[in-house]
Length: 361
Image (cartoon, rainbow, N blue to C red; front, side, top):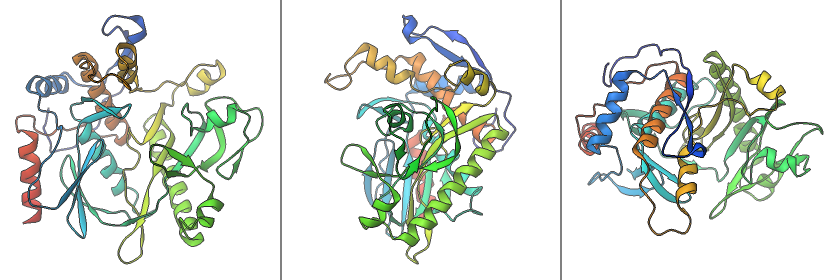
């Protein structure tokens, strides 16, 4: 197996039969195949050496802002974004997942390279598998959530509101008689704004009336978001996936050009289902098959109170490895390319600092 370098076609992907992890049937998960034994060995090496990219400290390049997953360095006209391996939920750090950061960074970069015919983006360079250098933009205070299916379980999800009897949502009208996970008649945009601790659904008319965006900027970004989503769905279907929903963020560069500025179509920003068998499972009332990453959250819920306990238990190594395998599998399925890991023999902090130093020389 190569380390970070060439590109090869990915192997066929399958879900193996369910296997039990750490004790109870409620924690039983499916182990994915399509990951080579060499890749498994590299994941083991990272875990044994505790060499996940947990945090960064790049001296002398600008102010650092630390988010849940990304460390952002302000260089003035540009920003350096380092995507780490941190896995968070319940507003807590749960674990560090080998190669998660590389998967997210490179998946987004892949999509940005393939969508410039729709809208320009802020990506300038990828000097390291975990690093993106971005043009600094003025961000629109709106998240553009695109949906193609009647699904979801959160407070802002389409199905949650529809199941309550609501037929108008974020300026869209939905007919009676739809069922969960059904494909919508057409893709829709359900924008949200950021509150202190949660997203708030908002209609296009409210966005303009509240002065969050001008009508001209809204029209342009709406068109771009739906075009990106449609293109993403077409490309995903070629690889046996349904792109169910996703979110985008846009901003303006110093010249006033509207640009895509955040991650695009990654496993964290998007929901993907397996296309094969979707119609049959829908007809039978079954949930669509997916490569779910929620099992780690469920394990913590079953073994502690993640909202109240001062100290959380350590995530089981087997769960951490399986989550790493699923991120890598999703990269391969989404891009159609084999995942080539960053060299695990080089400490990640050393690799990151060297890449930035070489870039800004």
